[in-house]
Image 1 (cartoon, rainbow, N blue to C red):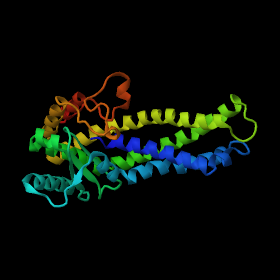
Image 2: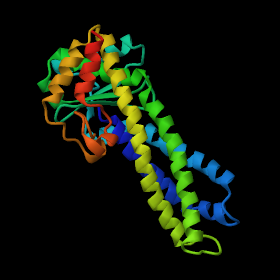
Image 3: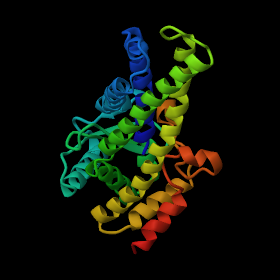
Image 4: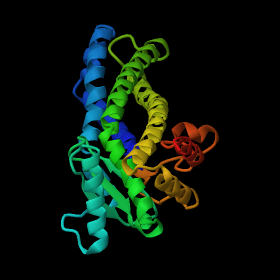
Length: 289
C-alpha cells in the first residue's frame, strides 16, 4: 500500500533533475531572452512535466525493489511461497490482467503494487503481513493490490501528476520571471533571482500538487477495497485485514515509501495521507453487506 508515496517522491526528484538539466542546456535563457514567451514555456512545461511523471512510472518497479530490498519469487520454495504465488496469479486471472511478479520483503505488516503496465506489474508483501494475518486476510490484501493494478491506478495517477507537473513547471517560471524583473530589477536576460525563485516555486507548488494527488489516491483506496471484496466474493476478509492493520504499528519502510495516514492522520497531515482512515474504509465495506 506504499506505492503512491514512492511514485510521488521519485517523480519530484525526476522533475527537479530535469529542471536543472533544462537550465544547464539554456532552456530558461531561450524562454526569457526576448521576454517570457508563454507559448514556448507551456510547450516546454508539457514536455518536462509529463516527462518526469512517465520516467518515474517506468522505473517504479525497480525503484520499489531496490528501496525495500524485496526479492522476486521466481521459483517458489515451500508451501507458503507456492500459496502466495498461486493466490496472486489466481486473483490476477480473475481480474483479467497479466500475472504480476510476486515479491516478499522483510518488514512490518504492509504490501504494495506498482509497475507501468497492468500486464507486467509487481505485487509485494512484507514478512510481517504474512506472519500476522490469516490466509483469508492476506488474500484480501492481495485482492486490494490486484485491483489497483487492474484499475490502472498508477497510470491514472501518472496522468494527473503530469498535468500538475506542467503547471508547477509553468507557474514557477512565470513567478520567477516576475520576481526577477520586479524585485531584483534585472534589465537584461535573467538574474540569480529568477533561478532562486524557480527552485523555491517548484518545491512549494510541488507540495501543493502532492495534496491533489493524495486526494485522488485516497478515493482510489475505497475502490481497491471494494475490488478486493468483489474478487473474494465477500467483504469480510478485507474488513478483517483492515481491523488487524488498525491495531498494528505501521510498517517501517524506507523514507521514500513512508506513507502518511495508513490508519488516518488528523489535521494538516491528513492532506498528505495516501490512504483514508481505516475506520472509514471499514464502514464503506460494511455498507456493501
